[in-house]
Amino acid sequence: MHIRSYQESDEAAVVALWQACGLTRPWNDPHKDIARKLLVQRELFLVGEVDGQLVATAMAGYEGHRGWVNYLAVQPDQRGQGHGAVLMAHIEQLLLALGCPKLNLQVRSSNTAVLDFYRHLGYAQDEAVSLGKRLIPDGPAA
Picture 1 (cartoon, rainbow, N blue to C red):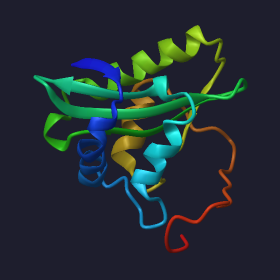
Picture 2 (picture 1 turned 30 degrees about the horizontal axis):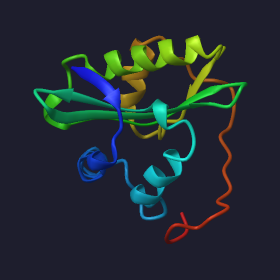
Picture 3 (picture 1 turned 180 degrees about the vertical axis):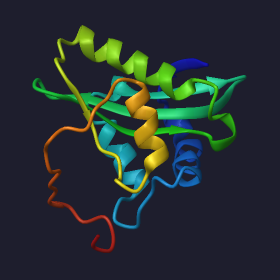
């Protein structure tokens, strides 16, 4: 898999991938999420390609204290080939080069397959509760 930075021409394929992976929600407009990411550390918005086809994505970020990963996705028919692990390792190296001491991510508790994937990569559940507050509504309330 070839990893590169997101390009504006990728938008339709990225949104289709997120939808195929069940990552989109009515209260998170994926087009707005992409536009917002392009304003902040756009170089950490990555896609993976196999034979010229977009098969993976990840949005990473670092605010000086913790790194974050959102929208890690691998095309369902491309899973089990190591693409997600390769993309995460690439992100870890990028964040480490920025001096990032710890990487955080959120996974819905019902998504046991993804939880197992991250555990296999060495991630562990923190003793913390994730809280959120929407400042700009994108759609119906969650």
